[in-house]
Image (tube, rainbow, N blue to C red; front, side):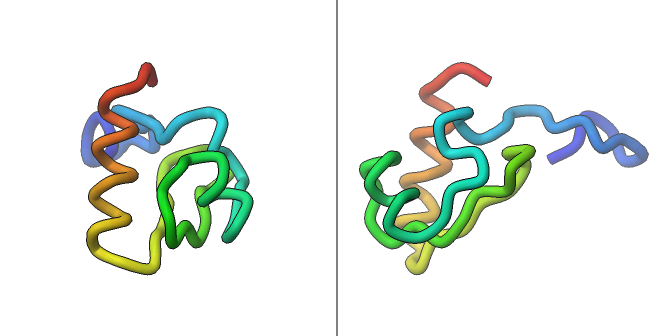
Amino acid sequence: MPTDPDSFTCRWPLPLAWAGMRDADLSATSGIPGGIFVHASRFIGGNKTREGAIAMAVASLEGSP
């Protein structure tokens, strides 16, 4: 979610440790099964399940940006 509609500044990036990771490496690093990817700039990530995506969002909010 950008800081404003015309901005590319991310309000709360995904954890730095997840940046650029995919598949099994992402799942192992995050501790959340089903990881698909996290963009290198940490503005978006994906998971195979709804529960996994929610777990990623919660873990992100619990950490520092």
